Image 1 (cartoon, rainbow, N blue to C red):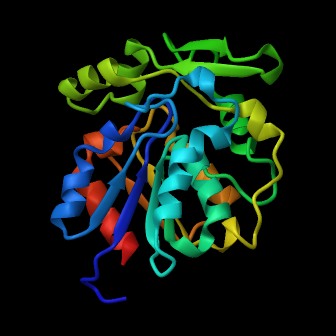
Image 2 (image 1 turned 135 degrees about the horizontal axis):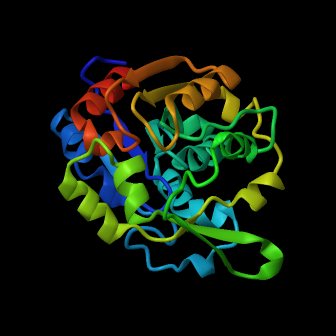
Length: 259
C-alpha cells in the first residue's frame, strides 16, 4: 500500500456509549486524509431501538454488520473496537474477514479461537473485587428465560473509573448521554468459539491504556498473552477512554497501525 493512501476507519464504541464518544478522534483521522465511519450499535446513542428489543449479541451488533455489508468487495477497512466493542469486532471478523485489513482492539475484550466467546469476560469478572462497579446498576430485562442483564454506569463509576483522566466537561457529557446496555454474557456463553479460518485470519493489533481503572493494564496484557497480536502499543497515561483523554496519541497510533 502507498504511504499516503486513504484508509477507511470504522469505529465501534463500547457498552452504554454511542458514536458520540469518537467526537474528538474522528476529525483528527479525517484531517489526516482518511475516511471515518462512526455509528450507534443497537439501542445505543441515538439508535431508536430499546434494550428490550434485543435478545442476543447479534441483535446488538446488527448496525456493524450493516456497515460491513455496505463496504465494496474491493475495499478493506481498519476496524477499531473499544472496550466491549472488541466482542462486536470479533463477530464482524468472523463474518467479513476479507473486508478487514486490520482489527484494532482498544482496551477491549478480545476473544480467542479456543474458548467460548464469553471466556474473556468471565475471566475479567473473576478478577474484579466485590463493589468495584460502585454505583453502576445491573438490572434484569427482557424475558426471564433469556437471563438478560442490563448495565448502566453510574456517575461515580464514570468519573473515578472510566474517565478519571478526562476533562470534566467530557465526564458531564458522558453522564448525560450514557444509556443502559448489556454484556450479553449468557448468550455469549452458549456460542461456539470463533474460527481460525475466519476470525483468526484477520491481522490484529491491541492498544493498551496504561492508567485504565476499568479494564486494568495487567488484564489487557493477559488478553494479549491469551491470544497474541501482530502489533501491540500502549498509551501510558490514558484512562479507559483513550479517545477522550488522549485523542492525538490514539490517532497517531491508529495511523501507524493502518500503514
